[in-house]
Every structure is written in structure tokens, then in C-alpha cells.
Amino acid sequence: SNATWDDLVNILDARTDMDLQQWSQVWVKEPDMPVLATTWTTKDGKISDFTIQQEKKSRGGAYWQQETTVTLFYADSIHQADVTIRGKNTKIPKLNGLPEPLAILPCSAPISYGYYQLDEQSREYLLANSPSFEDPVLRGATSLALYEAFLNGAFEEKLDYFNGLMVALNEEE
Image 1 (cartoon, rainbow, N blue to C red):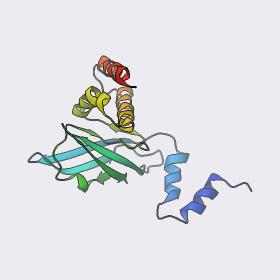
Image 2: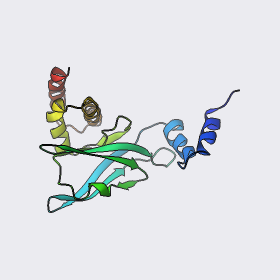
Image 3: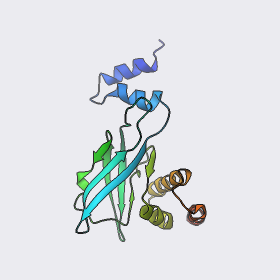
Image 4: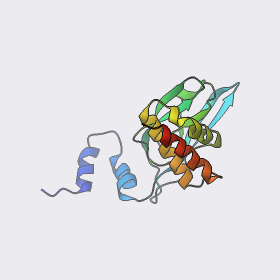
């Protein structure tokens, strides 16, 4: 039989609560990638509101739905939270009450896709410290996020990125 992509999506869509029609339209049929940013507020040194914002819609006007892991970096530990991003703004209340981190990597899951904008403090911390991360997946996700930041012009001094990359490459096994 010669089933099409749409036939497969229709069959699977009938067996899940997720809207696979919209997923297929945004992720498979349309070009481009999501652009996301994190925003947070703190009160008394603790996170009081944390949101991932999609700053760009697909060409068809929809937002990309996806799962990711947000990693918060502290001087002596990390905290990771699995998140499903839906729509323009995804609030993450499970991060409320945690201390303000040194850096945030909003795309540390291996299945994260898109340009997740990093704030300047996170870029600097991740560039300087990623070679010391024990988890190779976390190092890889950090490398990809920093590379996307470089491609999108987030580094004022291009040599900062390349110098950090050289240090990381020298320390990688």
C-alpha cells in the first residue's frame, strides 16, 4: 500500500490527545525554527515567576510545541526541570521558590530544537564553565546553545566565542 505522510498522521492522531495535525503542519510541512527566550523575576533572591516565550511563530502562524529540559546552574549544583512548551508563553511554576541561578540553559534536553536565546550572564557562565560539566549531554547541549548564540550575533566580541570553544575542545576527551 502507498500511505502518505498525512495518512500516517491521521491514524496516529486518532490515538493520542496531542493535536498531531497541527504538530505535523508546524514541524514537518513548514520551514524555519522556533525562537525562544526565558524571562524570570525574583523576589528576595528566589525565582517568583519563570516563563519561556516563543518570539516567533511558524509561517502558518502557529507556535511550536515541544519538550525540553531547563537547567539552572548554581555554584555547587544544578537543578533540572522537564517542561512542555505550548503556545506563546509557557510558565514554569515548579521553578518558583528556587534561588536565583548563576546561569540558565533552557534547552538542555537532547530533543530540544530552536534558537533558545541566552541572557548575557548565562552566555558568559556557560562559555567559561561548560568544559567542567560532567554530563556529556549537558556539555553538548551547551555547545549547541552557544553556537546558535554565535550564529545569531549574540556575542559582541566574536573572539570570546572562539576562545571559549578552543578551551572546551582542548578539555574534551
